[in-house]
Image (cartoon, rainbow, N blue to C red):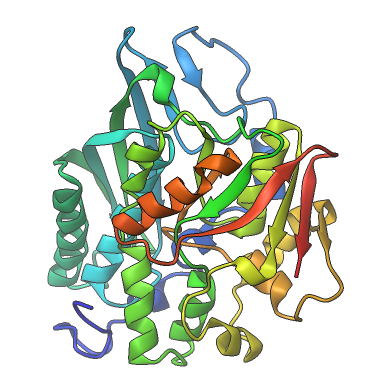
Length: 357
């Protein structure tokens, strides 16, 4: 852990989270509202080279350049999830780059998106946000080659990211197959921890777990896309594990099954959730897609909140053939994702999600 809100070298009265009405991927527009906004917006000119657009709410757009290369383009930005400006920059950059890995691509370049309340935040604080983003891009091996800045009421930071992949190795979120198993790369609970942090209820150890999870680049996506038995990929962000699993199921026209007892959770998440550290985004998520989910009656009371918990810079969700599951988990673990686990399956049936104990 590089820093904590208590030891940052900025005036103690400056709390980044106090400037924003939401934080991280919890800022996302609720899935049901977003669906209404985007309905019909994909109509118009759609060149044959556009391999992936907005039709299935995938992680990034993909444009085929030639027989060997496809360009992957994405953007992501949000308001502070933590008070430490360097950590905020790291989290936002890691989250934005993740969409390239989730498509099976290798990032090549980024542009910074910066909106800050210039008259309220010291220049050195804003500089620390940008330094944090730069440090993650350096770790990913890409430059920040430009960007755009504006004066804003709330602090916002993120990236436009571009990557490359072979057209045959693009992994979409709609290609899961009946009989596939689901593997998750990172533990869940980021939204709960961010809610606890804002209330002053997150321990220093808990903060360390939060930062470790949200600043870990989803680099296994590159190698996963090279496996023929990996059929679909996405990353788990603002709509929670339930929402993004539903996207896989809807895209494939199949039913997904998750096993609650197999879901990896960040340390200490259950008691934090039981104490009421739940984000408003969790409730909005359930209101948007809860009608498509069957929860087993034996599940604990906190299950609904954690299934819908918005994940900022969350893990990769993989749909693969059963015989590839051990290899997929091993690939994750070899790259330091020690919590990677098989969490469910895809099966024939009406599109939706069933959650079992």
